Structures are given as structure tokens and as C-alpha cells.
Amino acid sequence: MITFHLDSHSGVPAYLQIVQQVRHAVSLGVLRAGDQLPTVKEVVGTLAINPNTVLKAYRELDRAGVVEARRGQGTFVAQSVEGPSERDYRPLQTELAEWLTRARAAGLDDDAIRALVAATLRTQLAVRAVA
Amino acid sequence: MTTVPALSCDGLGKRFRSKWALRDCSLRIPAGSVTALVGPNGAGKTTLLQLAVGISAPSAGEIETLGWSPQRDPLMVLPRIGFLAQDHPLYRGFTLAEMLTFGRKLNSRWDDEAARRRLDGLGLALTQRVGKLSGGQQAQVALTLALAKRPEILLLDEPAASLDPLARREFLQGLMEAVAEHGVTVVLSSHILAELERVCDHLVILSRGRVALAGDTEEIVRSHRLLTGARRDVDEIAQLHSVIRATTTERQTTALVHANGHVYDSHWRVSDVDLEQIVLAYLALDPSPSPGPVAVR
Image (cartoon, rainbow over all chains, first blue to last red; front, side, top):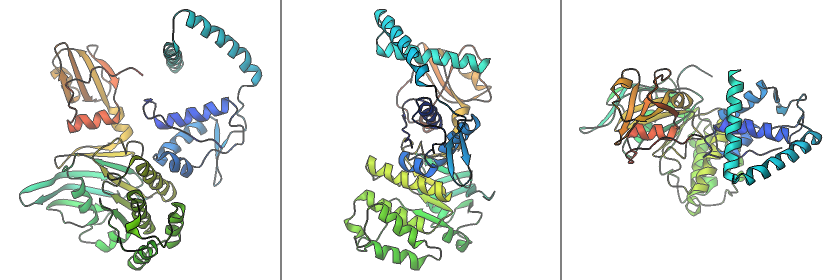
């Protein structure tokens, strides 16, 4: 089981933060196929948010095939979902470490690096949305 | 779920002597929604809630709660609503067990078991006296009693105003659990939006006794835009979109508009606004002369 947390100053809508946290947990292997997500009541009982926000997030994840709702039982990580394996992670992490060294050598501090990563992700997202 | 709105008003008004506390109020609050009633003190929030539960009668217009007039047909309304007044009135000398008995005797629909379970979950013993509880605990007890009625609509007047941040959060957690579990419609008032922004899906802004804005929060956010550009007249843009607030400095003009579709105008940089900025613009409370461009996120 995972717990969600919300950053109210991020500007990212609450439902999207939940979607991202589930996707993140799946890709890191914290959530595996068949694992149950917290019930709507559990989530609103900890985060003090509108239940519709959680429902919206779960519906979105369902549509994307990340989770499946089982009637009367709850919401579960879909069987077909498989996070990237350790084998995929290692080389990416090595390359990223090299890239970070180059970025720091070029004078970027942590904030600048984060901003650059966020901006690049956003650009790619926009390109994908158009394509 | 029925299609009857949980709350509807048409031309509703309430006058105290010569002063209108609420005027020309027309709105629909859908069943199953969580609605924040926002406005400064004296805007008419308490008046509207009291009209909704039938504590006072309208001076003009109509109000229906769950499809019935709370004044003309109180028996169709009162058993089905929960109302939490600002000072969450409880009998301070009563123990919690006595409070439950009191509620059970007065209400035909009463879920005693759920109330006991809820109090137990809050770590409260039935032998405790109301007067000895903290403000946060008293608010939770009042909420427990209101929920034990199994209401279809729960109206709360400034429920969080007197609570510290932790107690406020715990209160809203309990309230949202009830919404998730029973689908109860909730209308809650506050003079600050910040504490309700995450819990509400509908919003009613009251200002000086009138409805300044009402609707679905997502729809409200989607339809408002902040325009910034070199100093110029807003008349042109006002022909297409409603300008809620415009501020001009020596070089720059900033306008918050209720956009009628997309804003196509190369003079302006168009950005999103969050709910709080929109509320402030409608209440015209923002004291700063110009918010400046909104940071790109």
C-alpha cells in the first residue's frame, strides 16, 4: 500500500499529483501488478480532499491501463503493468550522473538543473500532445 | 441520485429592518457536491444558510432545500438535513453519552452505532463531558452528531474558523470520509478560501449580500484568464470577454477576465489563474496595485 502526499504550492492539480505518484510508484517497483491502491475513503481521510478528486485520478489511471477497478473490491495495479527493470535503470543512471557532472561544470546549480529538466519534460509533453 | 438540486434559490432576499443582508440570490447547488460558500464577514453567508435550514424566512424570492421549502414544509426538510452553526452548540454539562441520547430522542433517523464508532475512533470516551473537551474535539463531536442524523445535506457555517490548523485538517478529513462513504451533499462557509480549496468542487462567492460568482470550481478556473501586456486600454478586450479586474501601472496593464472562449489577441500574454486569485478578484480584496505577471510553472 502506498500513501499519497500533496504539494499545494506546486500548481499541479491534486488529481494529477495522485496520478503521477501512482505512475511513479509503479515505475520504481514500489507498486507491482495486483497491488491494491488505498480506497477513496482512506485517501480523503488522510489528505482531507474531495473524494471526486481521488475518483478522477483513479479513473484516469484506469483509462491509461495502469490500474483496474474491481467491482466491490477496490482498485488494483493492472496485471499488464510492468515497471522498468533494474537492468534498464543502471545504464540510465550512469549516463545521468555523467550528464550532471557536465552540467555542474558548465555552472548550473541544483535549482537550474531541476528547472532545465522540468522545462525539457514540459516541451516534450507539448510536442507529444501535438503529435 | 436525484436530479433535484440539493439547494436552489430564485431571487432570494433577506432584509433586516431596512438593510438587505442578502439580495437577488439565484443559484443551484447540485446533489452530491461539496460547495464552498465564500465571502468576507457580513457578505450574507450565515443568512443564506439560515434560510436554507428554515431558521429564518425569506423577505423576497424562494429557497428550496432538497426540493422543499424549509419554511412551508419543514417536515420534508428538517429530518433530512444536518446543520452545524458557527459556535457548534453543544450542552457543555452533558457527557457524550447524554449528548447521544439527546440526539437519538430528537431524531427519527439516528445511527447511534455509527456515532459511537466515530467517537471511539477519535479517542473520545462516552463518559467525558463536552465542556472539558478541546475546541477541535467539540467540533468533531458536533460533526459526529450531525452525521448521526444520516443527513442528505449537511450545512456548516464557518466550521473551521475557530480551530487550529491541525484540528481543522482533522475535521475536514472526517467530513470528507463522510462524503466518500455516504455521498452526503455538503455546503460549508468560510471567509477564506484557502482552507476549503482542496475539499470543494463547487463554489459560491458572496459579496455584499449578492452572488458574485457560482459554479463548478474546475469550470471556473478553466474560464478565467490573466492577461498581461504593455499599458493599454482594456475596452477592446472587454467587448469580447468580461473584465473582472484590471490594473494599470505606468507601463503595464494586467486584467483578469472571464473568457468567452479562447483569448486570441497578440497584445496580451495569456496565463492561467488559480481559484484563490479569482476569488480575490471578485471580492476586490487584493490590496496590491498590480500582481505583475504570474510566474510560469
